[in-house]
Image (cartoon, rainbow, N blue to C red; front, side, top):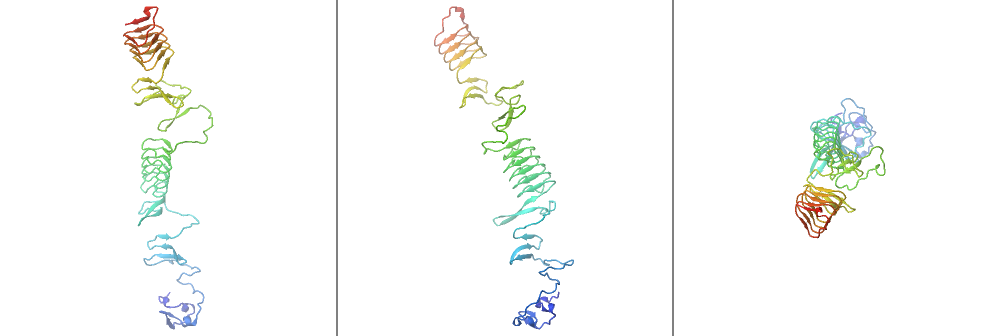
Length: 399
């Protein structure tokens, strides 16, 4: 088309009319002057312009700019899309896709290719953050800053803000939830579900964390819930009688589940079949406390130093043999023989339904002493109350 085309009204293209007049800084033919009320005929034949009814294209034809200016697309005289001079396309409103969106494999360039980003604005600072990508081998990352573009691990899946953000060589991890497994670098086969689930895991593997922060130590651990959970209901357990051999379930002070009874690691209410080395007690420097009652009250304490404290009366139906002294704050009643290697000290009344043998030490009773059998004391006998009379003086032997 002639470079002088903008000088013409276009009638010379339609009818070959001759240039005659100049009007409003443009050359127009006489029929087109406003005073002639000329009506334009149909559009001119298609040449190198874009017509409203479509164009027949030739190789090399294009719609766009040849200089460093972006191309705007408008409807209702409002910008809807911009093809920037640098090649980016900005869509002002929604993008509705009736078919597939095909992205290349995510590769590291600057910026990486094959990534869907989201735009963020913080004050006057605008940034873009990765949102969907599949960097690495068989990996899928969905969520703002989920995963990264330096990892070597494979077969990982994450969904959520910064999920698996620090991942390096770990493989086979599944993270669902914001910040889930975000500090894991080399751990593999971990599953985390929930906000910040498994966030403490760094290099451990084979853990399952459901709404739990996890731990920086330990492999193969299942953790469910956190300190905000006060009850647990599992459908399919309540009211169901299992078949086969059963074992009791126990929970320690840290919330760890275990089984007890029938040779398990806990003490069953119906008794245990124990092995050599099994015992009831503590393995740290704490007392073993035994309580009873609807409001549990301490009845006996085995101290960590080995001493035994009994808070109420002690009744023994058979013999009592102590390798050291006996100190009773209340009354002492023993049906069998009492043998002490050291002192007998009873604050209350001592009733021994059989003999008393103190091989070394004294007998000190603050109240009455009743002994039905032989009373033998290697040391002295101090009884605040009375000692019953014996028909045979040999019944009382004082060393």
